Image 1 (cartoon, rainbow, N blue to C red):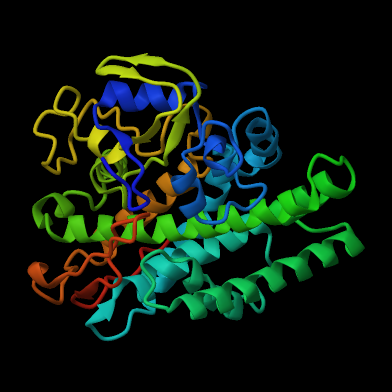
Image 2 (cartoon, one colour; image 1 turned 180 degrees about the vertical axis):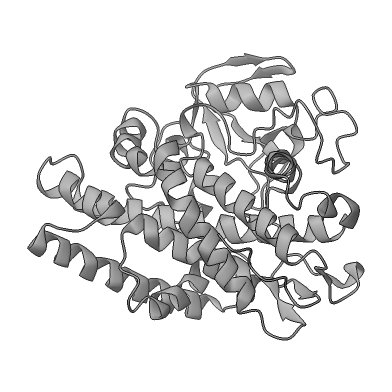
Length: 376
């Protein structure tokens, strides 16, 4: 394929090829930086600014060092500690639903993601609303102008810097801010630029992807009402449905370009040293060799070896959080708002296609009054 930069890029579409590329140290994400001997210059010059400290844009060993610092915040045990909070938050948002129609993103997906990420950061609940409003600047499907996004990003950065300064003074910050402050000031495992870069990247990428994923997932459930109706009161089936939503509805290709640093033999052919490669996780997740009837939505699909969260060193750090968010969202919607439906014809839904995601900038929904929360 040819990028807008005029660079020719190998598009990997088969499951085995994509998985091999994601796992192999011979394919470098750092090599897209200007000045790297193997970087196609046009592609490197056109790439967005690569913030120092971003997990997405570094190779081992730096990637391993940075990931190790924050991985403790995303362990299965830590994510399960957040689940009761996520359930309460989901129920509060459902209780607060206004008279339909409403936009699912504004009413549920965006605040649900933002508050859980602020929990990860260690932000006190008091005074959060102003910060939550800034998160719209990190949403890939946002209708904000570039200038408005930049303004909200700067506001968020000032907020994070203030939190970091307070953490250094009090030495009592919790969550990610506390962990990163300790790594920077006591252990010298982070540079100042890496500290800001990690927070910005995890929040920016994490929030935008989560909102786009939840919105696409809700749309798929609404358009398959019979399967949606089977999920109420069935936690095991909810988990299976979430895996199928992840397989079918990732809001983009799911991979980023890499440069081959040596000749690599894949099952579909050899990639030459210096070639740019784009692994399409979205295509791999519809490989009929692994997923019979791959375009169908099937909450009973088993096995379901999708690679929606990637594979290898860059396996998504927030995979556990994303799964938990989707499980809670699907379960609470199925049990409390089973009448959820589109407020516009499906053909009128508009998708963005900005190169990073293919998401819905809005999802107009309607519904009968939500069922009350069950006691206990």
